[in-house]
Image (cartoon, rainbow, N blue to C red):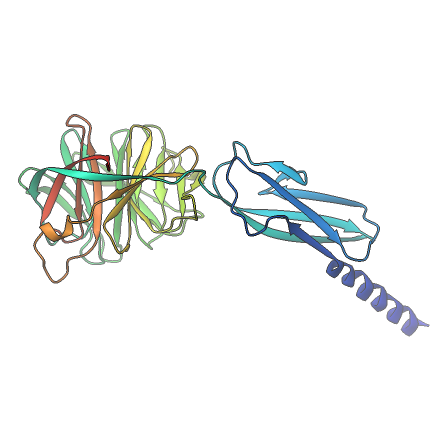
Length: 340
């Protein structure tokens, strides 16, 4: 008798398990990349007409209906999930949807205003002005540093070296404190800007790498090598939220050095074939502009370890940008404008 009960139980489990194969979450127009102007349409396909107790649809945890306007939703890649309850069994199905920018980014160019000497041994990772002094973070293990620089002469006014285990990355100065990231060290540091004295460290959370850093006067913004930029609490540096950086076609990865200017994020991009920068709308994640910096790299000393464009700083009094690169012998003061 016990054997029959066991066999019956196994049979019931097998039947219940098979039910999940009879449902499918289907996104209508699946090949389409959506914009915030679109409506997301999907349906649950019930192949064998099983009685359904209930279905719950969620987009990134938010309950939605089969017709869901995407208006006011930030750009990015999101998980659409269906939780189906049928015959006492719960089954879950999911699909990714991509919401891209509704318009193409505008093309920008640059005009060189001045050229200044720059330490060609500096593997530049972060660049920012504070009280008319240029602060610079450099990378590479065993060579990483944080320094104060006279931008006109290139002289290093003060410098501290990071422990050789760390690879220095982006910096930003907020509330009279310098914040510096490290690459894969899962650690950032806070400094006194006058003494360049480290005061404390902070750990990353979901973002496992440190790339670029900027601030809007209230929050810090951190890139991590993916298409995501994280908002950090100004006091604890804990991750509060994130934006996803999207063009009109796809997600844009390898966002490097960051600079906040007039409500937009100006950023370098790492290892592109051309020297380019991008302009990001931090409210939506849309790439609104692409800056063509081609030709700058050819104007510096062509040393053997010459690397990519990286380092962008805005001088609020001069209202100009300063850009350089990894192991570049020059720092360029430029004006950025729409390409005609």
